[in-house]
Image (cartoon, rainbow, N blue to C red; front, side, top):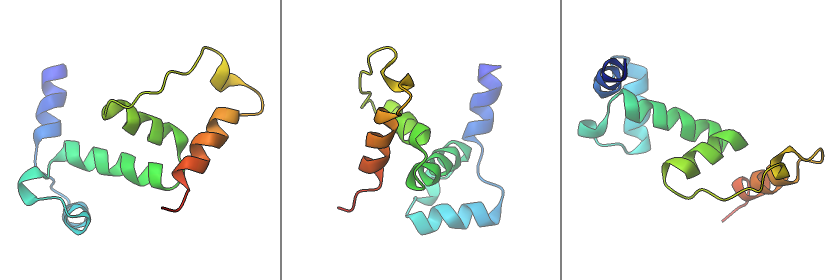
Length: 91
């Protein structure tokens, strides 16, 4: 199954709108495939404040932050509030 998934991810993008969206983002044509499309969708979610998408991006690029067990489950959602504030800060 892994091989099949890798095949699908390596396929070129067949939807013209999705292809154009990546082009507008500045992605090189030779880098456009379903895997890049999936990463761009994750990026879009993170940019709207989706904390889990931002955490996944950090994981992908190797910037995992160690979170003590139970810290993220606090009822006040402190970690999520901090992560959201960082995502929404103006640079």
